[in-house]
Image 1 (tube, rainbow, N blue to C red):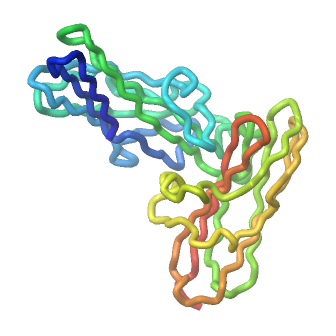
Image 2 (cartoon, one colour; image 1 turned 30 degrees about the vertical axis):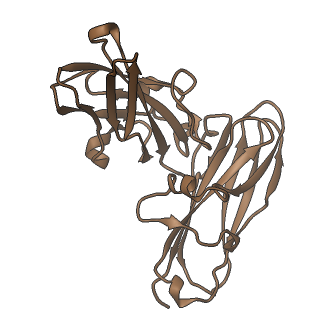
Image 3 (tube, helix red, strand yellow; image 1 turned 180 degrees about the vertical axis):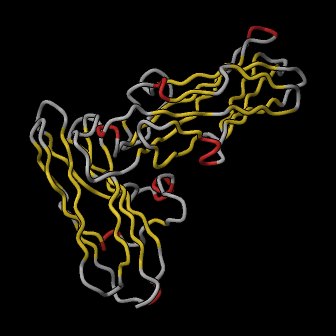
Length: 282
């Protein structure tokens, strides 16, 4: 939950504003299709009015460069109007809460598959007594459907095809499994990219990226790949991902996820989501 609290002067005049959730991820959004966030995920924005007076709040969406903060590995959404609220204002009675429905519609087109974007939801209280207006920003991470077969280069300065790689039916101690993805450098100049698991120094940060029902991979060394790639401007290059699990019966039936951050020497990084579904039995 995002909370803003303001204290003014010595006489303990205080105003608070609480909004939940403080941030969330939406997976598998299909370009060209209307996405009702509450219907698909059960999530909606909740505004808490803990005061003794009625308050009205205005709701809007922004690109992070306009308002809000980034999340590492995500690019900002190309157009914030692709994400909107059911109503642009919500009035909440004293000691109660109000809700705001959210919708997304990404334009159709193959270039909008395999995308990781971030958008800011702005909640601003209309000024009350004393002219005080508080604002809270909620960060939303949007991931469109990952697709191998596309006819266009992915949108954005960095892109992937696909952005999600799945290792399914993996047998511990079995043969090495290999999957491939393509990294696109859509910049006008060459970049050297380093590839490494996200959050090695901060596991709590990496956990924010995990898909439902998946845990973080317990050993990043089980997945092998080139740690460094040079890609010319406007070009792409294939990346092979090799997975080999030790022969341990305790690993059976597990579902893991590894987030590989692909970072240029200068500019914004992206990431590849790798999922591992271990077979339950031989």
